[in-house]
Image 1 (tube, rainbow, N blue to C red):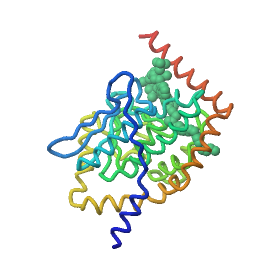
Image 2: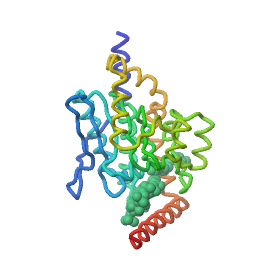
Image 3: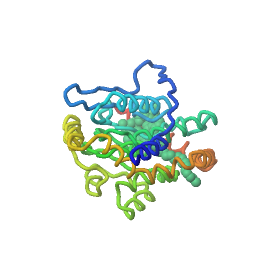
Image 4: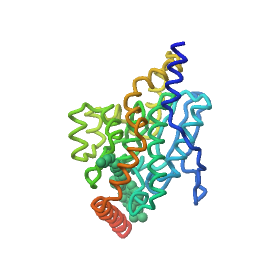
Amino acid sequence: MLRSKILNRIRLLKPVIDRRCMSSASKTPLTLLEVDDKSGIATLSLNRPPVNSLNIDLMNSIIESITEIEGNKSRGLILTSANDRVFCAGLDLNELHKPNQERLKEFWAVFQDVWLALHLCSVPTAAAINGHAPAGGCLLATACEYRVMLPQMTIGLNETQFGYMAPKWVMLSYLSVLPRRLAERALTQGKLFTTAEALDVGLVDEIAASKEEALAKCSTFIDSFSKANPLARSLTKKQIREPDVQKLIADRAGDLKECLEYINSPLLQDGLGAYFEALKQKSRSKAGKS
Ligand SMILES: CC/C=C\C/C=C\C/C=C\CC/C=C/CC(=O)SCCNC(=O)CCNC(=O)[C@H](O)C(C)(C)COP(=O)(O)OP(=O)(O)OC[C@H]1O[C@@H](n2cnc3c(N)ncnc32)[C@H](O)[C@@H]1OP(=O)(O)O
């Protein structure tokens, strides 16, 4: 009785996922999903060059992959990148700069969905962070239960550096891994941690010398649940994560409204335009040098 009550409650917590098609103009899969026959562990690789920035299609593809992993009885999920320099560059700035209003609404709803899907994923989750993970990239990693990172990369919620305040639920994700005082300082500074700093503060759990080693360490973490009953494990995880998730679920429409107003404000658009232009300029001068 108690168990079915909890199960119903958890079902209500699950995001309602609209299975929009995984469209891609280039016909390249935006995520690659591999399930190891022996271990039963699924590896989900982000595959949207050049930097895995999160647009609507990539986020829908991640959600569909998570749904598939939960349905195919995989023992765990490792999130990583097919790009060996960038784990995920965060939200696609093309979606935020001078946005089409209808698309922006859809974009934000899918952004909420992807966080909910990963944060509440029923199987053990680990991120093999094999490249830079700023902003939304850090959010994906912190939604996982364990993080292993390669040296000389950066990770953090750096939104204040380009004029954004991270939404409340994004901050909560940070607060679930960092002590409050540290999280407040890092969020207000918009700090990007180096791999060594991230390990030092507990933002990542381990450092690995190579992607293979990172994947192996993630697998070891997933194996550590071998003695736990999968349903009991998953219900326990969801109960613990419920308060944070409820803060978003209880007011998704409010979050969307706030976000639209904020993103559309001229101050934010100007700051974002300048930031994006500087990124493009940096990329052009790099290409000119090589
Ligand atoms: C009251 C308010 C209440 C609530 C608040 C509500 C709303 C708040 C609104 C929004 C907040 C949402 C939070 C946002 C989180 C985000 O994720 S925003 C994205 C932030 N991302 C970044 O800052 C990363 C920027 N990129 C980089 O630092 C580097 O690119 C990176 C280290 C990832 C890789 O470096 P490198 O390998 O050298 O690559 P390049 O820099 O040369 O880049 C290659 C090309 O990729 C383009 N690019 C890079 N990042 C992005 C991106 N995020 N989106 C789109 N495009 C990107 C770059 O321009 C290059 O393209 P080009 O060669 O010029 O065509």
